[in-house]
Image (cartoon, rainbow, N blue to C red; front, side, top):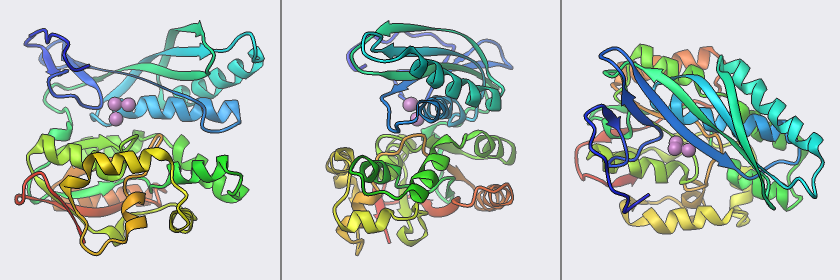
Length: 318
Ligand code: CO
Ligand code: CO
Ligand code: CO
């Protein structure tokens, strides 16, 4: 996206000058559009589940802004010459399943013939223009709530290598297909200062984005970061997706790792698909968001750190 001319429009609330999870455009004093597009290659063999994961992942960028998704369009790249059309039907059925759960209307879509299968959605939501939760909103003194455990990138790598048991694979799937809807609504209604979702850059990569755009420093209590079962064992054996290493190389200069072991540092950079929200809120509100999440069965949610003033744009692990 870099290098494109920026069109100045006073109604752009979040645009390409401050990249965020979604763009936000003000329509009136009461309502703004939240828009995003995302599509991915398959990470599981089951086409219905892949559709569910891709849709939850696409919806998440609207939830990460505190928005309410209302409409969506399918985006499909499908190898029609080599793959059965029933596979595509199952993918779309999986996507629709999550749209129904989210209360989102599917309006249409577009497909092209492509050698590599890809699926996702463009999603449009609404939000009050004064209630937009950006990555840049974290304030010194806030606590950080992470709403899902991390490690799906590592588990998916183990799955591809044929070394993941069925039970743990199912835990990973449940983590990915879980919508960030309730977490987003709680952040919005209880009140948060900033929010983003944890996806391809991993927990620390997205935490770095939040620190940079908010102009703050962040402390992470590594022992309180929720991790999916089996992840630490695979990490100690060096089972990582390539993205974990590149994420780490990209942002390691912002991180003071303290006594964090090397394998665990890489876990914290593990790229997530349809990961949780990272919500920055004043302490009483953060604790309320967490307790409501736990009440509603989001067992992986936790407070994982705090936002500080200095040193700015550094992530301190302890
Ligand atoms: Co995002
Ligand atoms: Co995004
Ligand atoms: Co995205």
